[in-house]
Length: 201
Image 1 (cartoon, rainbow, N blue to C red):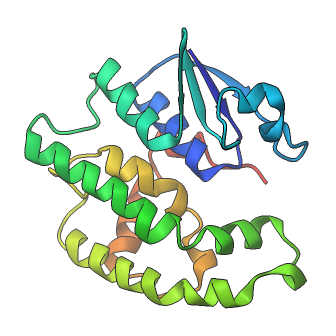
Image 2 (image 1 turned 135 degrees about the horizontal axis):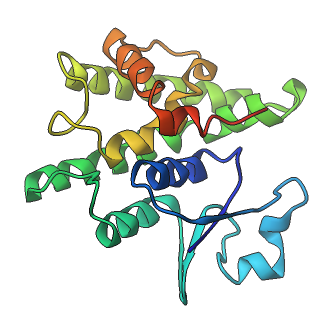
C-alpha cells in the first residue's frame, strides 16, 4: 500500500493520522508540490485533479482524503474509528461532510495564503468573507461539544480525524473560537498520531 502525500497538506495529514491510529503500514510517497510534481503526467494518471492524497492498494487507486478514510476503515475495521451502529456511523459521516463544507472549504484561501503566499498577494476580500460563516459553524460545533470530549458516541472517530489538520491552523482564521472547541482541539493535539504528523515548516 502506498500513500501519495505531502507533509504540508492538511487533507493528506488526515490520512496519515488514520494510518497511525489504525497501525497500518503504508509507504509514503512524497509529492513535491513546490516542484509541481502533482501536475506531472505520472501523478495525474493517478489523480486527474492533481491533488494529494492518493492511496494505491495493489491495483486499486483511490484519490481524495474522505473516501480514503472510509476505505481504510472498511478494510481495517480494528481498531475502529467509527461506532458500530448505523446511527453513529451516519453522524460521523455528517461531521466529516460538515468539516469540509463549513470549515475546510471556505477557509482554504486563508490558510494557504497565510502559510505560503506573500502578504501583498493575499485575496483579502475572499478571506474576510469566510469569517462570518466560519464563526457560525464554530458556534454550532461549540454547542455540540458542550460537556463532551468527542463529536460522536463519546469516542475518537474519523470525525475528529477530519477536523484535526484544520484545527491546527485555526488561529490563522482570526475568528472567535468557542471555549469548548478550544478545549477539544487542545486535547486532540496531544494524541501521538497528531504529534507525529505536525507539519514541520
